[in-house]
Image (cartoon, rainbow over all chains, first blue to last red):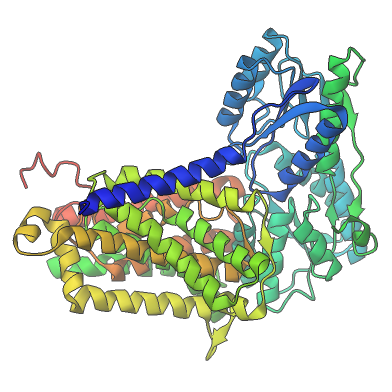
Length: 315
Length: 323
């Protein structure tokens, strides 16, 4: 008879091997195509990045490019992104698209790519250094301003507002909040009750909202810097039976948020069209490789989505 | 004075509550107290599992990832496959216990340090959760399922009931069953317990399995409450749970402490976060304040133990001291 501890070891080994082969199966190597590119997103914890990936992959298919999309295991980890870039340089890819998780931290990777003569495109988020061929994306501040202005208009220019901030120190979080603040400054009748971080996460959004609801008996509007936190706030206020009296806006136009808007649980969100950002990012890299001039900044408009136009976005 | 030690953590809790209620009039409202208990429930369930693991001298860093994997599996079975609720829940609990079994077997039979294997298990299970969901979030469960997270029985929210039931079961196990005393014996001196006829390896394996099952249970409550399941949930949970255990007075050296203290630890952490929201402390300061307060709490625990020459919370000089 096989000793028991050996059985356990064998079982564990089988379990691990099955898991590993599963992971290889979903990680295809480069196939033959005109250009080889890698596309690095910030994380996989938010459907936003999945949409961007699908846009990038569509562009790659349309243009006959071998595209490999990569995401750090630890969300928003710039170290891993740098490693992906280094691997790409070693594999001599033709272009690198990277959404910097940290605008400063990514610079060494971009400089290395510059040195190797590999063009770099940064969709969505900017890099503060190195030579970047093109940046494609929406102005977070402007979209934030549009969403907040829309919501404040719905309130009639007066009421009590809570802001749910993103992860402290995160550039998009700062830009979006700046947009909110600018819009609120134009409405003297608006009172900001609290502005607290929920770290871009749904569960934190729920927790922070539960706590704030204890302190403030009357909340007219919650503006969140992303949909995840907004959806957490929806759950918190729904459980407290206060969803009807409070309007909630998000940012990013995730599927769940669109569904909430169509059900009347959320007021609005802003759609940055991450799929378009991904698509245009790959196109820009392609044009650059073909020797065509490309714009330094490629601004993509980002519409505010509410109940009136949510149907056409809902998938 | 020595008899006061078990109450020192209770004292910390009372002082904290008194201080905060003085600063914010909203803190002691019934609705806020229920709110705190509900928020502490998940951390408490995880903390109970962590406590028994730590009493045996181990540690379980994989509980947050096991929570994510089991809740993602349950979500897929519920929403994509369309299995009935009890089946999905049992499947999630089975996954939790399998992860625990591997942890326990690796620790006891292959003699890998608990820190190493549970750390690796954290990546393994989290990675599987990512593969399963491919970056998606599963959202919107049936009202029957959501009852586990948002329902009430006799006016008491379900998460509080679940966490209370778990706590009482484990306090009972800890105090009145042979398994309970074996956990302490193994933690205090594994060799001696083996010589006295305790099947120490089996005890260790069972402890990790229980921790895995509790992680899965917490995952079910978590997704029912949040109405969503995603692979990244619970990244900070292992450390939160360890903090709750330490504040609760269970030393990392094992062989001592108990589930009761961990309840207080979980409450303390939740109350601090609740108070920071109520007081409107700036976003940039919150993580810092939480960290500082946890350090203070654990220092107080540690110091009062040293004062009465009890085993230390951190067993750094255990060998040097010749014990």
